[in-house]
Length: 502
Image (cartoon, rainbow, N blue to C red; front, side):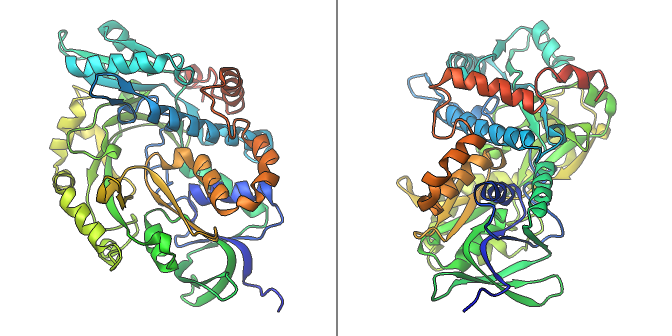
């Protein structure tokens, strides 16, 4: 039987940064493969990847305190920070390759240089930050990091935060200038424009109703199109990259690897500054310490952002709770995700995380005045009229049974794939988008092991450090730092923006 018009090699569900990255990698590796993308919204990058729905930090563990843990003996475990930094370097290399190949024309459309800082108050946290700085600054991945508890130096770094504080207040910060602000919404749209030019079929306003494996081992998908009619599409490989919507689709696939997995939704709200004078006084991403009981993605931070070629200032995120799995999702998402196979997992998670649920509900009920109080911990003279509220994206944390027990809440991203590699789903949240290239390379390794040897030279051309530890190869690290900064326009551009030449 000949191939029907609806048969394809690869179907990508969801037009976010993950599908955009996987599609771009595959088009470089096997340009002849036929790829279709189905997205339920009317354009790409509108959910978790959208610039207003995530922090755009370019997570490299330069400022996020939750990636470095103080051990019982007082030493600092930096292994997670090293892992995330190395993963972000893969993204930077891939983006540089795309710029060099003229597949991305203007890197400033999605990435800008921006100092990353950690800020703490009180002697106990200052002692922790100092130890963290000493542990990280010895590592080649974090070279250039500075520490200061001197109010004059801090006034130079973060005037908006330091002015109007009591002179005797204990406060300290670390700063590293190699940080970035990444507009993942813009990057997603750029990559999909490129894929469109490579004859990838993009279908917007298309929702996947069901997916089943047929007798030939292929996947049959029933998809509701923009007119409300049902289409059938068949593919050898399906990637489920639908953000919070991925769990339901994974369950529809029926693969055993998708059993005993649940999801816990966490929403977020940012305060956005509307006063250009205030925005002009701050030029950094400054991360504080999470409050007790808060999930890691609710670490308070005051961020300079570059959105639509304009400098913005955001504070947050305030966590919250809604049963929706997507910002555009349904109030029934959480309840319909509970199945016989994950019921006990979900109930165990509920019992274990009562304090987290309580914290999230309290956050939902915060008044604007209460939010202003939290902002004032960062900006002592903040005024309520200078700030508006923006609802951020939904994040669905993975719940699974682990060695730590049933119903353990996982923080981070996770690839779930079928044993035969014919389907893969991405679940979870931060540092998500920043590590998209690492995560999609994991999908290629898990789902296409038979091709990896053949693909390896091309992968190494796109990502020179593929398969190597940059930390153990300082000469390669230095070369990559220099070339990616140069290609992506990250070297020495900061002062230009401040002079309003941007």
